Length: 581
Image (cartoon, rainbow, N blue to C red):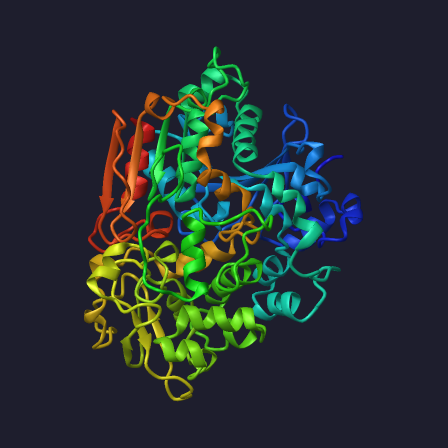
């Protein structure tokens, strides 16, 4: 069956409506996408391939073209029933506006694996920055961000429509209140039989997907070896490590089909390129609520495959990851309004405990719900900042350095653990002191947000210097909001397949598939955020490693092109040097 644009852009019909997919064509997709996506470009050389450019409000949108590409790649029959969209592979492609149209003619192609709970849209900033940085060095490069198959289950109809109408209500009415948008209604989040096929999508299938995509898009193996650089963020570094060492034809006597011959080098974004279990031996942590400890266990591989989708009691599950995207949407559409996403959020235990986990100032507030975090009077940007900023977000792997709160007093945030030197030194909670709003339920008090380049100015509060400084702020809150909501393959991942980290944590059973010198055969550049978990040293003979002061785990993807110290963004500069060198 020919692919429909609706399948390509994860706006397929709701789960349970699979029989409708054959009738969804370009007219419906155009209606859903509005002005965000432009006309599809179908390659005549590769049947079934679809590419569609998309509009962006990014500062570099005029210099860097973005598009979403989808190719046919059916899963084996053993995977069981699934939507047609899940028999395709998709990625975001960025390239120079004045560069070659054909990927094979680019000087280099960076291919990135996303981290845990992360989609292709997370690379929007670093990709555009890197393409521009390489152009200043005389190189036309491309950046491809891969999207996992599980994202085919997401329904972005409400978000896409809200970007078109400019109203947050368009999205929240669709997702929370059963409103019809473009002839469709949200069918709820997939579970049970609808996600059972994901129990077959683990490490081996994820690696095969990348291999098949590269061969489809760049059929010449010599060209792949010469021009492709493989890498990833967070968990994506370990996936890339396995890719580098995997034997795809199963014959150890031949090497043409090994992962290391699909790439000429590797790049690691706050991770390492290593075929092994992520973050082994993290050691003891303080006693924490399950809503906090479960994500830490998840990134450490301490999970089972009891459910095909990794969904925790709060903070990380399909509902809350979509809510994070909607929080970015609210800040993108109306940054200074106080009538944003929190008043519109569903009133249920999952959302309530998530808000308490992310915004409580101490254990008493978390346990009792008093004061109610929903009574915080804050702008849409301030809510997004309070959820993801390194001076507020409790979990290090969800932190970015996006400025600081202002407009009213703050106090030390003591939940989930006080910010002692030992706690901050662990990296799991970031290295920044945590602040919490001190005033709730007061309509006369409005918390606002200072962007990364407004910290340390006359607009700063008297409390600010206790928690941060200009050198510790690197990402624009406005850019983060845009990245969470604009790309057609989104930043957050609703349905993360639990088999993938389980396989990574059970690495020894894949020894027969691996060439254990694969990683060391090619050079690697490693970019390390100073505010995260300490990454192990490697014995790679040709690794270049940089530690990035002021950066946290998400900042390596989202940092602004122009930094507060007057220098250009450092991750993209290093990647451009690596690609152009």
